[in-house]
Image 1: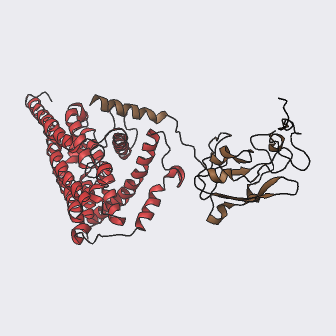
Image 2: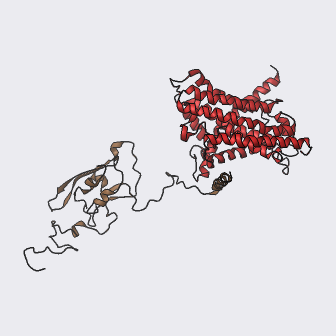
Image 3: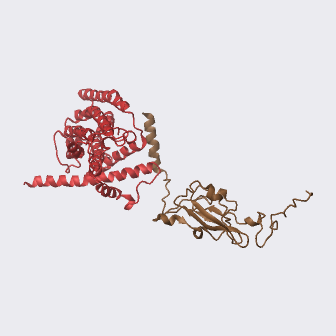
Length: 171
Length: 324
Protein backbone atom coordinates (compact mmCIF):
# COMPACT_ATOMS: atom_id res chain seq x y z
CA UNK A 1 0.00 0.00 0.00
CA UNK A 2 2.84 2.35 0.89
CA UNK A 3 4.62 1.60 -2.37
CA UNK A 4 1.45 2.45 -4.28
CA UNK A 5 1.26 5.84 -2.60
CA UNK A 6 4.93 6.38 -3.34
CA UNK A 7 4.30 5.50 -6.99
CA UNK A 8 1.50 8.04 -7.15
CA UNK A 9 3.73 10.69 -5.63
CA UNK A 10 6.51 9.97 -8.10
CA UNK A 11 4.07 10.23 -11.01
CA UNK A 12 2.62 13.44 -9.61
CA UNK A 13 6.09 14.99 -9.53
CA UNK A 14 6.22 14.57 -13.29
CA UNK A 15 3.72 17.42 -13.58
CA UNK A 16 6.72 19.71 -13.56
CA UNK A 17 8.94 17.69 -15.87
CA UNK A 18 9.43 18.98 -19.36
CA UNK A 19 7.91 16.81 -22.07
CA UNK A 20 10.33 14.79 -24.17
CA UNK A 21 8.18 15.14 -27.26
CA UNK A 22 9.61 16.81 -30.34
CA UNK A 23 6.57 18.30 -32.08
CA UNK A 24 7.67 17.13 -35.48
CA UNK A 25 6.50 19.19 -38.41
CA UNK A 26 7.13 22.50 -36.63
CA UNK A 27 10.07 21.33 -34.58
CA UNK A 28 12.63 19.10 -36.24
CA UNK A 29 14.72 16.62 -34.32
CA UNK A 30 18.52 16.85 -34.56
CA UNK A 31 19.85 14.25 -36.93
CA UNK A 32 23.54 13.41 -36.75
CA UNK A 33 25.59 14.05 -39.94
CA UNK A 34 25.98 10.31 -40.43
CA UNK A 35 22.29 9.55 -39.86
CA UNK A 36 21.07 7.05 -42.42
CA UNK A 37 18.44 8.66 -44.66
CA UNK A 38 17.98 9.29 -48.37
CA UNK A 39 20.73 7.82 -50.57
CA UNK A 40 22.79 9.99 -52.92
CA UNK A 41 25.50 9.38 -55.52
CA UNK A 42 28.49 11.68 -55.02
CA UNK A 43 31.14 13.07 -57.36
CA UNK A 44 34.91 13.12 -56.91
CA UNK A 45 36.79 16.44 -56.32
CA UNK A 46 37.18 16.91 -60.06
CA UNK A 47 33.41 16.76 -60.57
CA UNK A 48 33.33 13.35 -62.22
CA UNK A 49 30.97 10.63 -61.11
CA UNK A 50 32.52 8.35 -58.52
CA UNK A 51 30.34 5.37 -59.28
CA UNK A 52 32.06 2.75 -61.40
CA UNK A 53 29.00 0.52 -61.69
CA UNK A 54 30.63 -2.41 -59.90
CA UNK A 55 27.27 -3.74 -58.62
CA UNK A 56 28.61 -4.38 -55.09
CA UNK A 57 25.88 -2.16 -53.59
CA UNK A 58 23.18 -4.01 -55.49
CA UNK A 59 24.59 -7.30 -54.21
CA UNK A 60 24.85 -6.05 -50.63
CA UNK A 61 21.31 -4.66 -50.62
CA UNK A 62 19.17 -6.99 -48.47
CA UNK A 63 15.91 -5.85 -50.10
CA UNK A 64 17.20 -5.67 -53.69
CA UNK A 65 16.15 -2.08 -54.18
CA UNK A 66 19.18 -1.04 -56.25
CA UNK A 67 19.37 -1.70 -59.99
CA UNK A 68 22.20 -0.53 -62.26
CA UNK A 69 24.13 -1.33 -65.41
CA UNK A 70 27.85 -0.74 -65.94
CA UNK A 71 29.25 0.84 -69.09
CA UNK A 72 32.80 1.80 -70.18
CA UNK A 73 33.42 5.21 -71.68
CA UNK A 74 35.86 5.95 -74.47
CA UNK A 75 38.44 7.30 -72.00
CA UNK A 76 38.50 3.99 -70.17
CA UNK A 77 36.44 5.13 -67.16
CA UNK A 78 33.69 2.87 -65.98
CA UNK A 79 30.37 4.41 -64.99
CA UNK A 80 26.75 3.42 -64.45
CA UNK A 81 24.60 3.51 -67.57
CA UNK A 82 21.55 3.73 -65.39
CA UNK A 83 21.26 3.68 -61.63
CA UNK A 84 17.90 3.20 -59.98
CA UNK A 85 16.97 3.02 -56.29
CA UNK A 86 13.44 2.12 -55.29
CA UNK A 87 12.95 4.01 -52.03
CA UNK A 88 9.63 2.35 -51.37
CA UNK A 89 11.67 -0.80 -50.73
CA UNK A 90 14.82 0.70 -49.27
CA UNK A 91 15.21 0.05 -45.53
CA UNK A 92 18.01 2.62 -45.14
CA UNK A 93 20.34 -0.01 -43.68
CA UNK A 94 23.49 1.55 -45.14
CA UNK A 95 24.96 -1.74 -46.40
CA UNK A 96 25.37 -0.23 -49.87
CA UNK A 97 27.47 2.57 -48.42
CA UNK A 98 29.68 0.05 -46.63
CA UNK A 99 30.03 -2.07 -49.75
CA UNK A 100 30.94 0.80 -52.09
CA UNK A 101 34.69 0.70 -53.02
CA UNK A 102 34.67 4.26 -54.40
CA UNK A 103 32.67 6.13 -51.73
CA UNK A 104 30.16 6.93 -54.46
CA UNK A 105 26.95 5.85 -52.76
CA UNK A 106 26.31 7.61 -49.45
CA UNK A 107 23.41 8.05 -47.05
CA UNK A 108 22.29 11.54 -45.98
CA UNK A 109 20.35 12.73 -42.92
CA UNK A 110 17.26 13.52 -45.01
CA UNK A 111 14.47 11.28 -43.78
CA UNK A 112 11.47 13.02 -45.29
CA UNK A 113 10.70 10.59 -48.06
CA UNK A 114 6.91 10.82 -48.15
CA UNK A 115 5.07 10.80 -51.47
CA UNK A 116 1.43 10.51 -52.46
CA UNK A 117 2.30 8.32 -55.44
CA UNK A 118 4.46 5.27 -54.93
CA UNK A 119 6.02 5.64 -58.39
CA UNK A 120 7.59 8.91 -57.26
CA UNK A 121 9.75 6.95 -54.85
CA UNK A 122 11.71 5.31 -57.66
CA UNK A 123 14.78 7.53 -58.03
CA UNK A 124 16.80 7.47 -61.25
CA UNK A 125 20.46 8.45 -61.60
CA UNK A 126 19.69 12.12 -62.29
CA UNK A 127 17.72 12.27 -59.03
CA UNK A 128 20.44 10.55 -57.06
CA UNK A 129 23.53 12.41 -58.31
CA UNK A 130 24.64 15.44 -56.31
CA UNK A 131 27.20 18.06 -57.20
CA UNK A 132 29.44 17.34 -54.24
CA UNK A 133 31.80 14.94 -52.59
CA UNK A 134 29.61 13.97 -49.65
CA UNK A 135 31.42 12.85 -46.55
CA UNK A 136 34.85 12.29 -48.17
CA UNK A 137 36.05 15.54 -49.67
CA UNK A 138 39.45 14.64 -51.16
CA UNK A 139 38.96 11.08 -52.26
CA UNK A 140 39.33 10.25 -55.91
CA UNK A 141 39.17 6.57 -56.75
CA UNK A 142 41.34 6.88 -59.84
CA UNK A 143 44.17 8.45 -57.83
CA UNK A 144 44.48 5.32 -55.72
CA UNK A 145 43.44 2.38 -57.79
CA UNK A 146 46.25 1.97 -60.27
CA UNK A 147 43.85 1.70 -63.15
CA UNK A 148 44.72 3.21 -66.52
CA UNK A 149 42.36 5.87 -67.77
CA UNK A 150 42.59 8.37 -70.64
CA UNK A 151 44.82 11.07 -69.12
CA UNK A 152 46.88 8.89 -66.80
CA UNK A 153 48.72 5.64 -67.17
CA UNK A 154 49.19 2.88 -64.56
CA UNK A 155 50.98 4.06 -61.43
CA UNK A 156 51.16 7.72 -62.35
CA UNK A 157 48.74 9.12 -59.77
CA UNK A 158 49.51 10.51 -56.30
CA UNK A 159 49.48 7.44 -54.14
CA UNK A 160 50.34 4.89 -56.76
CA UNK A 161 53.59 3.12 -57.41
CA UNK A 162 54.71 2.19 -60.88
CA UNK A 163 53.85 -1.37 -61.81
CA UNK A 164 56.31 -4.05 -60.77
CA UNK A 165 58.32 -5.70 -63.53
CA UNK A 166 57.14 -9.20 -62.86
CA UNK A 167 59.80 -10.70 -65.09
CA UNK A 168 62.75 -8.99 -63.39
CA UNK A 169 64.70 -10.40 -60.41
CA UNK A 170 65.13 -7.20 -58.43
CA UNK A 171 63.03 -6.79 -55.28
CA UNK B 1 -48.65 22.57 -17.12
CA UNK B 2 -47.69 24.39 -13.98
CA UNK B 3 -44.73 26.75 -14.25
CA UNK B 4 -42.87 24.73 -11.59
CA UNK B 5 -42.90 21.61 -13.75
CA UNK B 6 -41.68 23.62 -16.74
CA UNK B 7 -38.89 25.04 -14.61
CA UNK B 8 -37.92 21.52 -13.53
CA UNK B 9 -37.93 20.26 -17.09
CA UNK B 10 -35.74 23.17 -18.13
CA UNK B 11 -33.36 22.45 -15.27
CA UNK B 12 -33.13 18.78 -16.22
CA UNK B 13 -32.47 19.69 -19.84
CA UNK B 14 -29.74 22.15 -18.92
CA UNK B 15 -28.05 19.72 -16.57
CA UNK B 16 -28.05 16.91 -19.13
CA UNK B 17 -26.95 19.27 -21.89
CA UNK B 18 -24.03 20.34 -19.74
CA UNK B 19 -23.11 16.95 -18.30
CA UNK B 20 -22.62 15.18 -21.62
CA UNK B 21 -20.14 17.72 -23.07
CA UNK B 22 -18.40 17.74 -19.68
CA UNK B 23 -17.99 13.98 -19.86
CA UNK B 24 -16.60 14.34 -23.38
CA UNK B 25 -14.20 17.07 -22.30
CA UNK B 26 -13.12 14.85 -19.45
CA UNK B 27 -11.75 12.37 -21.99
CA UNK B 28 -9.54 15.13 -23.34
CA UNK B 29 -8.55 16.28 -19.84
CA UNK B 30 -7.61 12.73 -18.97
CA UNK B 31 -5.52 12.24 -22.09
CA UNK B 32 -3.75 15.55 -21.58
CA UNK B 33 -3.04 14.85 -17.91
CA UNK B 34 -1.80 11.33 -18.56
CA UNK B 35 0.40 12.80 -21.27
CA UNK B 36 1.84 15.36 -18.91
CA UNK B 37 2.50 12.75 -16.24
CA UNK B 38 4.24 10.53 -18.76
CA UNK B 39 6.40 13.42 -20.04
CA UNK B 40 4.40 13.73 -23.25
CA UNK B 41 2.01 16.44 -24.48
CA UNK B 42 -1.17 14.47 -25.12
CA UNK B 43 -3.64 15.58 -27.79
CA UNK B 44 -2.79 19.26 -28.45
CA UNK B 45 -3.56 19.76 -32.12
CA UNK B 46 -7.32 20.16 -32.54
CA UNK B 47 -8.41 23.61 -31.43
CA UNK B 48 -6.79 25.61 -28.62
CA UNK B 49 -4.75 23.20 -26.44
CA UNK B 50 -6.46 20.37 -28.32
CA UNK B 51 -9.73 20.89 -26.49
CA UNK B 52 -11.74 20.03 -29.60
CA UNK B 53 -10.15 16.58 -29.71
CA UNK B 54 -13.20 15.05 -28.05
CA UNK B 55 -15.45 16.67 -30.64
CA UNK B 56 -13.33 15.22 -33.42
CA UNK B 57 -13.43 11.82 -31.74
CA UNK B 58 -17.19 12.10 -31.34
CA UNK B 59 -17.69 12.95 -35.01
CA UNK B 60 -15.52 10.02 -35.96
CA UNK B 61 -17.31 7.57 -33.69
CA UNK B 62 -20.67 8.71 -35.06
CA UNK B 63 -19.42 7.86 -38.53
CA UNK B 64 -18.49 4.33 -37.53
CA UNK B 65 -20.60 1.37 -38.50
CA UNK B 66 -22.97 0.47 -35.69
CA UNK B 67 -22.38 -3.25 -35.95
CA UNK B 68 -24.43 -5.82 -34.10
CA UNK B 69 -22.76 -9.22 -34.21
CA UNK B 70 -24.96 -11.89 -35.83
CA UNK B 71 -24.29 -14.28 -32.93
CA UNK B 72 -25.51 -11.82 -30.32
CA UNK B 73 -28.86 -11.37 -28.62
CA UNK B 74 -29.98 -8.30 -30.55
CA UNK B 75 -32.48 -6.78 -28.11
CA UNK B 76 -30.35 -7.15 -25.00
CA UNK B 77 -27.25 -6.12 -26.90
CA UNK B 78 -28.94 -2.88 -27.88
CA UNK B 79 -30.45 -1.88 -24.55
CA UNK B 80 -27.40 -2.75 -22.38
CA UNK B 81 -25.43 0.47 -23.10
CA UNK B 82 -28.58 2.54 -22.65
CA UNK B 83 -29.13 1.11 -19.16
CA UNK B 84 -25.61 2.08 -18.17
CA UNK B 85 -25.83 5.69 -19.34
CA UNK B 86 -29.35 6.17 -18.01
CA UNK B 87 -28.52 4.82 -14.53
CA UNK B 88 -25.60 7.22 -14.17
CA UNK B 89 -27.60 10.15 -15.48
CA UNK B 90 -30.47 9.31 -13.09
CA UNK B 91 -28.06 9.48 -10.15
CA UNK B 92 -27.29 13.08 -11.05
CA UNK B 93 -30.93 13.90 -10.32
CA UNK B 94 -30.27 13.80 -6.58
CA UNK B 95 -26.94 15.66 -6.58
CA UNK B 96 -27.34 19.09 -4.97
CA UNK B 97 -25.11 21.32 -7.10
CA UNK B 98 -25.79 24.56 -5.23
CA UNK B 99 -28.45 25.70 -2.70
CA UNK B 100 -30.74 26.42 -5.67
CA UNK B 101 -29.65 24.06 -8.45
CA UNK B 102 -30.48 20.37 -8.26
CA UNK B 103 -33.16 18.36 -9.99
CA UNK B 104 -34.74 16.55 -7.06
CA UNK B 105 -34.64 17.19 -3.34
CA UNK B 106 -35.40 13.55 -2.61
CA UNK B 107 -35.58 12.60 1.04
CA UNK B 108 -33.87 9.27 0.29
CA UNK B 109 -31.35 10.72 -2.15
CA UNK B 110 -28.43 8.69 -0.84
CA UNK B 111 -30.38 5.44 -1.13
CA UNK B 112 -31.43 6.43 -4.64
CA UNK B 113 -27.78 6.90 -5.59
CA UNK B 114 -26.86 3.49 -4.17
CA UNK B 115 -29.79 1.88 -5.99
CA UNK B 116 -28.76 3.42 -9.30
CA UNK B 117 -25.17 2.34 -8.76
CA UNK B 118 -26.42 -1.21 -8.25
CA UNK B 119 -28.69 -1.08 -11.27
CA UNK B 120 -25.86 -0.06 -13.55
CA UNK B 121 -24.37 -3.54 -13.03
CA UNK B 122 -27.09 -4.78 -15.35
CA UNK B 123 -25.63 -2.74 -18.16
CA UNK B 124 -22.26 -4.44 -17.92
CA UNK B 125 -23.51 -7.94 -17.20
CA UNK B 126 -26.12 -7.86 -19.95
CA UNK B 127 -23.61 -6.42 -22.42
CA UNK B 128 -21.18 -9.22 -21.62
CA UNK B 129 -23.90 -11.86 -21.79
CA UNK B 130 -25.61 -10.62 -24.96
CA UNK B 131 -22.34 -10.27 -26.86
CA UNK B 132 -22.04 -14.06 -26.73
CA UNK B 133 -18.27 -14.06 -26.99
CA UNK B 134 -15.64 -15.27 -24.55
CA UNK B 135 -13.92 -12.00 -23.73
CA UNK B 136 -17.18 -10.16 -23.25
CA UNK B 137 -18.50 -12.99 -21.11
CA UNK B 138 -15.43 -12.95 -18.86
CA UNK B 139 -15.66 -9.19 -18.57
CA UNK B 140 -19.32 -9.37 -17.65
CA UNK B 141 -18.67 -12.04 -15.01
CA UNK B 142 -15.90 -10.00 -13.48
CA UNK B 143 -18.06 -6.90 -13.47
CA UNK B 144 -20.86 -8.75 -11.70
CA UNK B 145 -18.61 -10.15 -8.98
CA UNK B 146 -16.69 -6.90 -8.54
CA UNK B 147 -19.66 -4.57 -8.43
CA UNK B 148 -21.77 -6.75 -6.18
CA UNK B 149 -19.00 -7.20 -3.64
CA UNK B 150 -17.87 -3.58 -3.68
CA UNK B 151 -21.30 -2.05 -3.33
CA UNK B 152 -21.75 -3.92 -0.05
CA UNK B 153 -19.23 -1.78 1.76
CA UNK B 154 -19.91 1.24 -0.38
CA UNK B 155 -23.31 1.30 1.30
CA UNK B 156 -21.76 0.60 4.70
CA UNK B 157 -19.16 3.33 4.34
CA UNK B 158 -21.72 6.08 3.85
CA UNK B 159 -23.82 4.90 6.80
CA UNK B 160 -21.40 6.75 9.05
CA UNK B 161 -22.40 9.95 7.29
CA UNK B 162 -26.06 9.10 7.74
CA UNK B 163 -25.48 8.40 11.44
CA UNK B 164 -23.85 11.76 11.98
CA UNK B 165 -26.26 13.85 9.93
CA UNK B 166 -29.41 11.85 10.64
CA UNK B 167 -30.74 12.10 7.09
CA UNK B 168 -30.64 10.43 3.69
CA UNK B 169 -31.34 13.74 1.97
CA UNK B 170 -28.15 14.87 0.22
CA UNK B 171 -29.05 18.54 0.46
CA UNK B 172 -29.47 18.26 4.23
CA UNK B 173 -26.23 16.28 4.45
CA UNK B 174 -24.42 19.21 2.84
CA UNK B 175 -26.14 21.72 5.11
CA UNK B 176 -25.19 19.63 8.15
CA UNK B 177 -21.52 20.18 7.23
CA UNK B 178 -21.69 23.96 7.63
CA UNK B 179 -19.73 23.75 10.89
CA UNK B 180 -17.12 21.35 9.55
CA UNK B 181 -16.79 18.85 6.78
CA UNK B 182 -17.50 15.22 7.56
CA UNK B 183 -14.03 14.20 6.35
CA UNK B 184 -12.80 15.25 9.80
CA UNK B 185 -14.62 12.42 11.54
CA UNK B 186 -15.30 10.09 8.65
CA UNK B 187 -11.94 9.81 6.91
CA UNK B 188 -11.96 6.00 7.13
CA UNK B 189 -15.44 5.99 5.66
CA UNK B 190 -14.24 8.38 2.95
CA UNK B 191 -11.37 6.16 1.86
CA UNK B 192 -13.59 3.10 1.80
CA UNK B 193 -16.18 5.02 -0.20
CA UNK B 194 -13.58 6.30 -2.65
CA UNK B 195 -12.11 2.86 -3.28
CA UNK B 196 -15.58 1.36 -3.69
CA UNK B 197 -16.44 4.23 -6.02
CA UNK B 198 -13.42 3.52 -8.22
CA UNK B 199 -14.48 -0.11 -8.38
CA UNK B 200 -18.09 0.83 -9.14
CA UNK B 201 -17.09 3.06 -12.04
CA UNK B 202 -14.66 0.41 -13.40
CA UNK B 203 -11.77 2.82 -13.39
CA UNK B 204 -8.17 1.81 -13.17
CA UNK B 205 -6.74 0.22 -11.10
CA UNK B 206 -10.04 -1.64 -10.74
CA UNK B 207 -10.95 -1.83 -14.42
CA UNK B 208 -10.97 -5.62 -14.47
CA UNK B 209 -14.23 -5.87 -16.45
CA UNK B 210 -12.49 -4.04 -19.31
CA UNK B 211 -8.83 -4.94 -18.71
CA UNK B 212 -7.66 -4.25 -22.23
CA UNK B 213 -4.36 -6.04 -21.69
CA UNK B 214 -6.05 -9.33 -20.79
CA UNK B 215 -9.60 -9.22 -22.15
CA UNK B 216 -9.22 -7.08 -25.31
CA UNK B 217 -11.95 -4.69 -24.16
CA UNK B 218 -13.86 -6.89 -21.72
CA UNK B 219 -17.60 -6.51 -21.73
CA UNK B 220 -17.68 -4.05 -24.63
CA UNK B 221 -15.41 -6.03 -26.96
CA UNK B 222 -18.20 -6.46 -29.52
CA UNK B 223 -19.49 -2.90 -29.34
CA UNK B 224 -18.81 -0.21 -31.89
CA UNK B 225 -20.09 3.17 -32.98
CA UNK B 226 -22.73 4.88 -30.95
CA UNK B 227 -23.25 2.02 -28.51
CA UNK B 228 -19.59 2.01 -27.61
CA UNK B 229 -19.79 5.78 -27.20
CA UNK B 230 -22.61 5.29 -24.71
CA UNK B 231 -20.45 2.98 -22.59
CA UNK B 232 -17.67 5.52 -22.78
CA UNK B 233 -20.03 8.30 -21.79
CA UNK B 234 -21.32 6.21 -18.89
CA UNK B 235 -17.80 5.58 -17.62
CA UNK B 236 -16.78 9.23 -17.63
CA UNK B 237 -20.12 10.33 -16.22
CA UNK B 238 -19.68 7.89 -13.36
CA UNK B 239 -16.23 9.31 -12.68
CA UNK B 240 -17.90 12.69 -12.33
CA UNK B 241 -20.67 11.15 -10.27
CA UNK B 242 -18.36 9.44 -7.78
CA UNK B 243 -16.36 12.67 -7.48
CA UNK B 244 -19.55 14.64 -6.91
CA UNK B 245 -20.77 12.15 -4.31
CA UNK B 246 -17.45 12.25 -2.46
CA UNK B 247 -17.69 16.02 -2.38
CA UNK B 248 -21.31 16.05 -1.24
CA UNK B 249 -20.89 13.40 1.45
CA UNK B 250 -17.48 14.22 2.88
CA UNK B 251 -16.26 17.57 1.58
CA UNK B 252 -19.18 19.85 2.23
CA UNK B 253 -20.67 20.02 -1.24
CA UNK B 254 -20.97 23.62 -2.38
CA UNK B 255 -19.79 24.99 0.99
CA UNK B 256 -16.54 26.90 0.87
CA UNK B 257 -13.54 26.01 3.04
CA UNK B 258 -13.98 27.76 6.39
CA UNK B 259 -11.15 30.35 6.32
CA UNK B 260 -12.05 31.63 2.84
CA UNK B 261 -15.36 33.37 3.34
CA UNK B 262 -17.86 34.01 0.55
CA UNK B 263 -15.12 34.34 -1.97
CA UNK B 264 -16.41 32.42 -4.97
CA UNK B 265 -19.98 31.41 -5.86
CA UNK B 266 -21.09 28.02 -4.48
CA UNK B 267 -21.22 26.38 -7.92
CA UNK B 268 -17.57 27.24 -8.54
CA UNK B 269 -16.58 25.68 -5.23
CA UNK B 270 -18.52 22.56 -6.09
CA UNK B 271 -16.89 22.29 -9.51
CA UNK B 272 -13.41 22.93 -8.09
CA UNK B 273 -13.84 20.18 -5.53
CA UNK B 274 -15.14 17.78 -8.17
CA UNK B 275 -12.18 18.61 -10.41
CA UNK B 276 -9.81 17.76 -7.59
CA UNK B 277 -11.26 14.26 -7.38
CA UNK B 278 -11.38 13.85 -11.15
CA UNK B 279 -7.66 14.64 -11.27
CA UNK B 280 -7.09 12.16 -8.47
CA UNK B 281 -8.90 9.49 -10.50
CA UNK B 282 -6.70 10.25 -13.50
CA UNK B 283 -3.58 10.10 -11.33
CA UNK B 284 -4.67 6.68 -10.10
CA UNK B 285 -5.03 5.56 -13.67
CA UNK B 286 -1.55 6.71 -14.67
CA UNK B 287 0.32 5.35 -11.71
CA UNK B 288 -1.18 2.14 -10.41
CA UNK B 289 -1.07 -1.37 -11.87
CA UNK B 290 -4.17 -3.54 -12.14
CA UNK B 291 -4.54 -6.20 -9.43
CA UNK B 292 -5.39 -9.80 -10.19
CA UNK B 293 -9.07 -10.64 -9.99
CA UNK B 294 -8.84 -12.81 -6.86
CA UNK B 295 -6.70 -10.13 -5.21
CA UNK B 296 -9.42 -7.61 -5.95
CA UNK B 297 -12.16 -9.71 -4.39
CA UNK B 298 -10.01 -10.71 -1.42
CA UNK B 299 -9.17 -7.04 -0.84
CA UNK B 300 -12.86 -6.21 -0.91
CA UNK B 301 -14.17 -8.88 1.40
CA UNK B 302 -11.23 -9.36 3.76
CA UNK B 303 -10.03 -5.78 4.21
CA UNK B 304 -12.49 -3.17 3.06
CA UNK B 305 -15.65 -4.78 4.45
CA UNK B 306 -14.24 -5.23 7.99
CA UNK B 307 -12.82 -1.70 7.86
CA UNK B 308 -16.19 -0.30 6.82
CA UNK B 309 -17.91 -2.25 9.61
CA UNK B 310 -15.42 -1.10 12.24
CA UNK B 311 -15.86 2.47 11.04
CA UNK B 312 -19.62 2.16 11.31
CA UNK B 313 -19.43 0.64 14.82
CA UNK B 314 -16.97 3.27 16.03
CA UNK B 315 -19.07 6.09 14.63
CA UNK B 316 -22.19 4.64 16.24
CA UNK B 317 -20.42 4.20 19.58
CA UNK B 318 -19.01 7.72 19.55
CA UNK B 319 -22.38 9.06 18.52
CA UNK B 320 -24.08 7.23 21.37
CA UNK B 321 -21.42 8.48 23.76
CA UNK B 322 -22.18 11.98 22.58
CA UNK B 323 -18.61 12.66 21.45
CA UNK B 324 -19.42 13.25 17.77
